[in-house]
Amino acid sequence: MTVRSPRHRPRRQCSFCHTYADEQRVVISGPSVFICEDCVWAAAYILAEGVPPERLDGRPMIPGDLGG
Image (tube, rainbow, N blue to C red; front, top):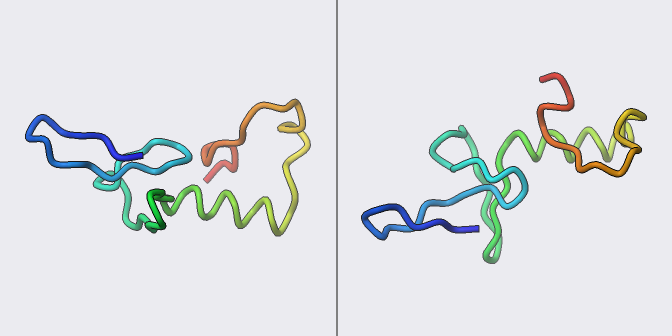
């Protein structure tokens, strides 16, 4: 998602956690989507380890859930 700043210059924002790119070290862009480093790590964890049991309640997982 891209949000316009007061100067009407688009700010890149993570499409998953909505953190702005200038608040992250790394933001990867794709065709009209962005993913921050924290969400990449969360996705890698889910792929390697599976969803932590406490998140099987159907709520979306966010990077802070990993304790990192």
